[in-house]
Length: 139
Image 1 (cartoon, helix red, strand yellow):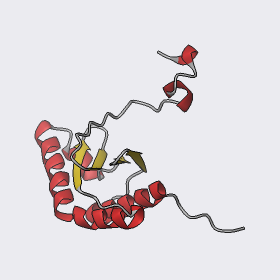
Image 2 (cartoon, rainbow, N blue to C red; image 1 turned 90 degrees about the vertical axis):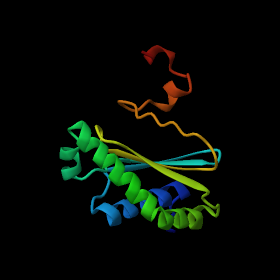
Image 3 (cartoon, rainbow, N blue to C red; image 1 turned 30 degrees about the horizontal axis):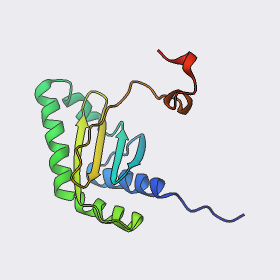
């Protein structure tokens, strides 16, 4: 049986996970990659280290964790940008990172002049409900 090549999304997720591990020593539990037009959003769930989670319990500590990850991303994002360009064949023009300290989620957005708003839902939504095919199960 021939070996299946990972999709671009899987390759980007693997690269982002490895990138996070190199920078922090911690591997995210799950990495999600979504492409919408020319905006690529990488979400790393449970990406904070245990020490960062403890620190983030206070407002001042949460601000420190957020600033640390923003600065870490700004200082080292070039490697991930190059890897995304290699995988997709498309140059990354802009990149930004945001940390949600309560859930431990880190979001990287690679855009080209686009405002990105990311909302982390409390749980997933089925494709059927999202597409309006399952009206009976809507809240």
